[in-house]
Amino acid sequence: MPQASQHFTSIGHRLAGFFRAGAAVGRGVAIAAALTPVMLASAQAETPVRIGYIPIIGAAPVVVADKEGWLKADGVKPTFTVFESGPNMIQALASGTIDVYVAGIAPLAVARSKGIDVKVVAATAIEEMTVMAGPKLAPYFEGGKPAAEAFRAFRAKEGKPARLATQPPGSVPDTTLRHWLDRVNKVDKADYQIVPMGIDATQQALLAGAVDGATVREPADSIIAARNPAIKIVALGGDMFPTQPGTVIAVSGAFLKAHPEAVQSLVNASVRAIKFIKDEPAKASPHIGQVLGKGLIPDAVVQKALASPATKLEADPKIIIEPTAKMQAYQVELGTVPEAAALDGLFDPSFYEKAKAGK
Image (cartoon, rainbow, N blue to C red; front, side, top):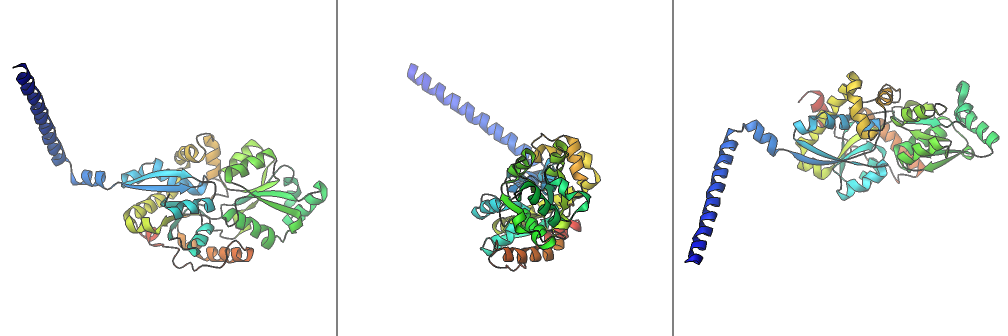
C-alpha cells in the first residue's frame, strides 16, 4: 500500500494548504473589515499620471508638489519624463505617451490648430525668458547700450554676426528672442545668427564659447553666472515680450475626461507649491535642485535662482490668455504658425478657480 499511502499523504498536504489559505483569506477579510473607508478610498483612488516637463524653474511647482508628497496624498501617482523643448513634448502628448505637459504655451496653440485635444489648466510662471551674452558679446552692452548698437558694434569688431542659441522654431524661447531682436530693438538681421538647439546644449554651448549669446531660463541663468561671471543677462522676459506667457500645465483631452479629479488635485498641489516656494525657498530648493539639476546644483545656486528677477511664479492662466494671443499673432508673422487658432477652447481656468477657492 505504499502508493496509496503516498496518495493520501499528498491529499493531506493539499488539504492542509487549502485550510491555511482559507485562514489567510479569513485574516485578510478581517483586516479589510478593520480598514476605515478613508483608508480604502485612498488605496483604491490612486491615479497614474505621466508628466512631461522641461528642466526649468517653471516646472518647479509640480516638482515640489511631488517631492512634498502632496500628489500622492491626494491619490495621484506621477511619473516624470524630461524633454529638451516644448515642441518635442507635443509629439509625446499627441501620441498618448504623456498625459500632462509642463512647458511653454506657444507649442500648444500650434498643436491645437492641428487637431490635438489639449487644455491649459494652470500657469506656473510668466516672463521667465532671458537673453544672456557671452564674454565676447556682453561688453558691448555695458553702460546700457541699446541692443541694436551692441550687435552692430560686435559685428564690426569681430567681423561676424553674433551667434545666438535658442530652442526650435515655434517654441517660446525662439519666439521671444526674435520679438526682442526684431520688434523691440530692430536689430539688423545681418548682425546676428540664430542657432536652434536643446536646452542642455544651449547651456553647454554658451559656457564653452561656441555661441555668443543664448535664451536661458532659471535655474540655468544662475548656474551659468556661477561658473562664468563674465556671462551676463542683457534682457529679462518683460523686456523681450511684456507679460510673456511662460510655462503652463496642460492636460490631454482624453486624460481630462477620464480623470478630472486627478487634474484638480494636480492644480491644487501646484498652486500650493507656488506659495510654498515663495514663502519657504530654503525648504523648496533641495527638491528643485534634485530634480531640475539632477542633484548637481549647489543649494545656494538654486536659492539664488528662486530669488532671481527672472523667476516670476504665477498660477492664474487667465493672466496669459491675451499675451498668448499676441504671441500667436507674432508667430503667424514669423511663419512658425500657419494661422492664428482660436484660443477659446485652449484654456480651462475652472480648475485654478477651484484651487484658489480652496475647493
